[in-house]
Length: 150
Image (cartoon, rainbow, N blue to C red):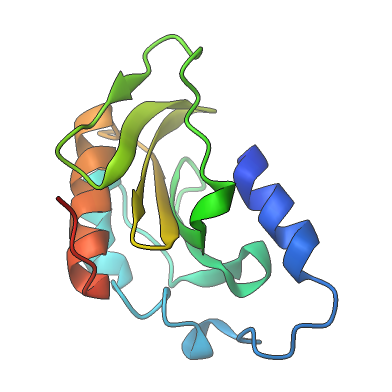
């Protein structure tokens, strides 16, 4: 189950043209090193496999061992931030970054916010995935990256 939001696809297309600075393997991807699979399992209620590069190295995805969910974290330039305000279930997260939100996403939830010059987006899908778990993962990701959010 590999899922890509429109923002991520746009970022992948824009950066895939020979940028040799992107990590080639998950072990080189700083986003994959933010969390280990065991730490992330609580956000989705499923055991996860090790992280794999996603979005041409701009993100990392951890698939569930039973293939019934995943966790994804992607960091793109803030100019690519888009909030799906028309999606039923969308909710603003005014206490997380700028233009923070959570919204249903495919078979789970996403949360994102602008922090500094980046848009940080997470998604969760699994037994206990929810808007609250997506928002908590977003907060934890911002904290682990050393970003500060208002």
